[in-house]
Length: 114
Image 1: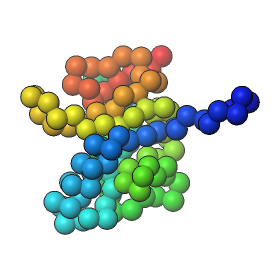
Image 2 (image 1 turned 135 degrees about the vertical axis):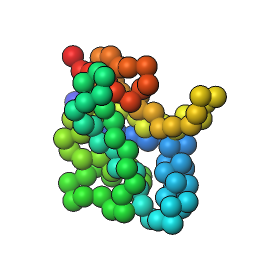
Image 3 (image 1 turned 180 degrees about the horizontal axis):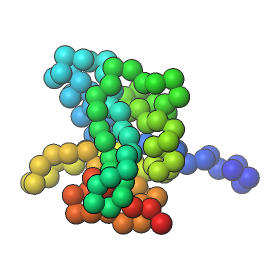
Image 4 (image 1 turned 60 degrees about the vertical axis):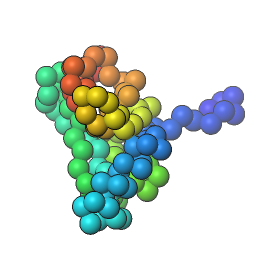
């Protein structure tokens, strides 16, 4: 940045999300695997998040802390977003806090952009 401050991370994951990825990978017998996060067309708001376990990143993926893989097309819709793990009364799940999203659905899995 012109003022010398560091650029914000294009995408980040909380320590609890990273710990949960490691735990899921270990339970699946794939301790080196990571979480692939992608954005796809669909869902009730236009776009939806897709989560998959992946053994390795693709060559052009953004790799976050060695455990989360985001492809460049999805990254355009995830600029400045954060992956977290929520363990709530209604269930435990990954959540994405996405400043690019202008609205979302109640399930938290789909969103739209302006």
